[in-house]
Length: 262
Image (cartoon, rainbow, N blue to C red; front, side):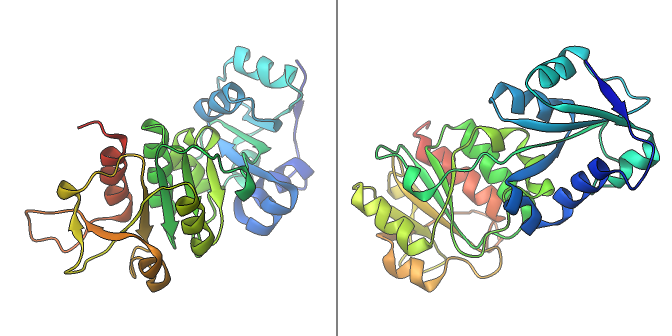
């Protein structure tokens, strides 16, 4: 196992990892993203994701078994002191390991014919919300999460961190909301949209199992286009005085309902 010591802030690996963390266009042009932590490296390797570069903080203890597995799978290993290491990260106190890997992309035409639950995201912009939704969808084995117009980048570091590894397992697709709804209807899947409306049906009065549910933007909700195309509008009944729920929390409740685990 060969680990190369980095001694300059001009090093190409430091610049590469830093740019992956900050530049969406760069990430997508080369189809790579940056992750941090031993858990995430373990999850990526367990999911057979291609690892390109691993950077270790020089004075940190990192599992030799994990590093050997990455090395044997073709990754280049580097180490750097704390000051240089921190230049490669987008956070003030990063974990002891950073790595670049392939994005686990799914194309629209790869959407399976048989689906047992789908979340359509209509303009979700908060990285924490998106990460929560992907993690919950993975926990309850949803067939797909579809990102529609206006969603934040699922491969941005803040999203990736909050998925706790689900980004490597949960099938994520990207397509316009109209195409997504048409795809659901072509599979005889009912599409429901969350909406604060007098015409909305309580989720207590409808089965969401094997359905598709649209979650809207944190501030504006589901777009009018999506509301016009969906089969029904639904609402989560609440006993308190809060007008609405955080998008990630609302999606988690609906995913639980979709799983039929009552």
